[in-house]
Image (tube, rainbow over all chains, first blue to last red; front, side):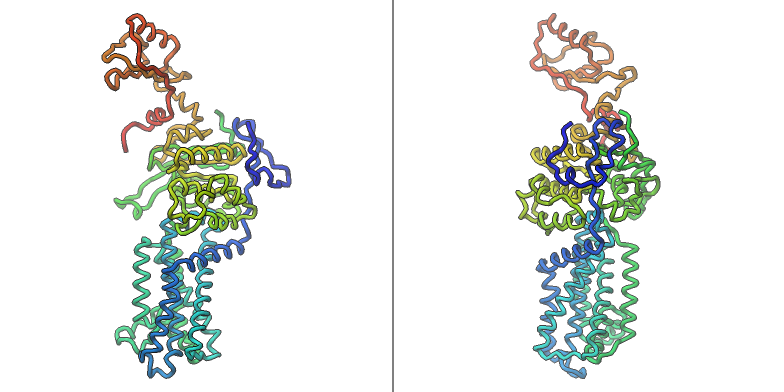
Length: 284
Length: 323
């Protein structure tokens, strides 16, 4: 039997104990002495960071996702500052608009963008394949969450860079609570995105998450405060993740206050959608 | 061949897998695998051979931890795949039937990314050279041909330098050159001690690659053995130990061979003038038929002798009806 010479990593792997050997070599006529030594997994943190980085780059390379994540929110922000839609609400147009735009960014990335990419990854068996590597299912989800946070950070920086010259003056006391609430909102929308992506066909995920982005964006209390919405919408938006996130961010960045009721609604959505996704997410 | 159970990489016993009513068309519980058992060893290629829908993929997906089994036990490198941690997953390479590679990815960054999940991966440059991936390294997965995708999926399964390799229909979509490349690599990996488990519905794959074959039908084992053992699988009682062969020849149509060959050998005329004599042919049988021709002045226009193929065995065992 010829030994393999073309396979350096197997033969040359330092085995420490000179290969445990194969006691059964005699019983199995065709088996060569064991030289296969599987490599161990990379450390957990490294696997998650790698996956997060890979997913972030994939998201940023996707033109449609960039339009949804960056171009649309910026257009909405400019639209809200040049029209009188937000006049008479106690502060400047830009000060009222920006918190809602940040909330919209979270919905774009965590819900629509991440949901669609996860849905198609599921269709193409990417989730199944990656779950057989050391990354595993938990690492895969952790990597996705990391990518959402990385893209969200980029969105916050871009929106801030455009909004400051337009006259945005957030309440300093509200900055930290605002960012924490933004992360909580991203968590709620990530859970919802995974729930949709993991339970219906990717084409349906595409339709549902895009449609909800438009509906919630226009009427969900996210960029347009509840008081400017039709009476019917006013009654429900406080219970929607969009309305709760928009309102909580406006309270933080405008007044430096934490809206406990809205935070509670967001926590509830995160818990319910996260639990449902854990329970019903189909990997194939 | 005696299967030595001392160094199994995979042991499955009494595997049962039911698919819930939501996943089937008629809303009934379906038993996809019913009581299947098998053993795969280091340094061997173990093939699960069966028609489409026989339960091969379900079986290996239970072994990979991708599907939860209903009953039975599975030991993969001594661990239960349902409780697999990163340590076990790092020792097992998986090539899925549908590839499982993101369509927008490019081959080399993708392989480097997967390699990063392991402590001591197979050098990516070497792997891409070995599988001819450099020829399409700038093309996104979406635009690769079936064979290119298959080679990339194999590279992705190997990049972690696994001890156990699962290949689900490895030659699907491969052109003859890629197939040779992939088969040579599989043989080398086997010789280097890797335990390889593959599924296929292609007899030729099993015949060329496998050290040990399990024939699967309707979710259960129907036969097992080395390729040689299966080929000697007797058609009828009393033929034990002899090879079944087919003598193919073309001659003038309508010949009657009654009494020329012994009872166990059946002569059929598939097309006018095209004959096949199948059975446990002995040298005396060959002498008898050529003497019969000589006595009548018949010269066959073609003449060949074929050993029984694994396909014949498979059809004998699992039945010839289309399902």
